[in-house]
Length: 137
Image 1: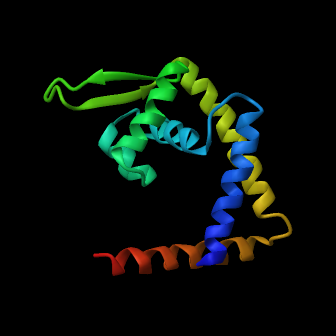
Image 2: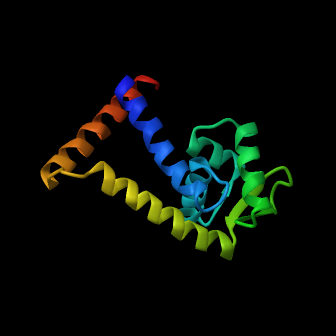
C-alpha cells in the first residue's frame, strides 16, 4: 500500500508541475473539471464525494475555479441550499489542456509496458480496489 501511495503522490506531483506551467491550479482542480466534463452539472456534495475530500476543502477548490472563470454556480430550483456547478466555455477549453496532461502521465506510466501487462495491471488494481471497498461496507 505504501507503494500505491507513493505512485499517487508522484502522479500528483507530475500533474501539479505541468499545471503550474499553465497557471496556478493543482490536480484536484483538474479532477473537478474532468468530473464536470463528464456529468455536465454536479452538486458540491457530489463533487466532494467524487474527489474524496470534505465539503470545506471542496468549497475552497470550487471557489478558485469560479474565480478563474472555469466553472459557474447555479442554485437548485428545488432546494435553495443546494448549488450546482457546471463548466464555462473557458472551463471546457482548460479541460482540454488538463486532458492532455493526463494523457502525458498515462504515456509516462505505461512506458515499456506491453498491452497484456497494461491489462493485467489494470485488472489487478480494480480487484484490489473492490476488495478494499467491499471491506468498508
